[in-house]
Amino acid sequence: MKTKEKILVESMKLFSVSGYNAVSIRTIADAVEIGNSALYKHFSSKQAIFDAIVEESKQRYIKECSRYVTEDIRGVEPVKNVCISMFKYQTTDEWIVMFRRILLLEKFKNEKIASIYKEFFVDIPIKNLISIFEELMDKGLMTKGNSEVFAMELYSPFYLYHFVERNQKELKELFMEHVDNFFKEHFISKEQ
Image (spheres, helix red, strand yellow):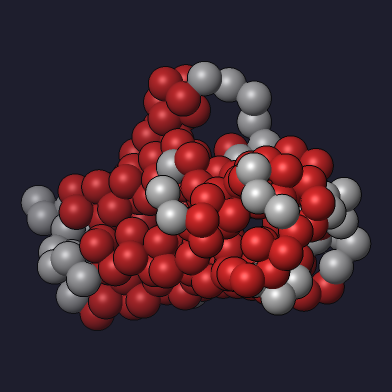
């Protein structure tokens, strides 16, 4: 692993445990096993490291979202698959879990970090679901209604389960039950 990448990884680990403000450049340099001056060759400040973590997280998140949003959505099963895949990604991907933890630790202390948290874990998912639901309503596959309300209704467990201390299997089962109930309520059966 290259030094710059190692700085990001070790900073991510440290920030996700102690919070951004509690971690010093010296602590990061020690974790990477380099001196402060060597660290400054790669990043001009702790804020620059954090900004690089945000950018890396954004690229990973967008890449994962784009895998599903570009799929042809023609019915219940493809949408369910998207939901389950994104739920799994948000709750098991080590990088994204650490990133979310950093944002949660710092969002009440820093407006910029609160804004980043809202963008990643509220705005982007809701916007994607709104788009999917509007398409499904236009195709007559989903009951007509407010796509934003539907999006928030379906997405709320993603958000809530970020805070639930349960094993992944139990969380997935609960989430799948929620998704099934949502689709029973809002999707139009072909037999009707």
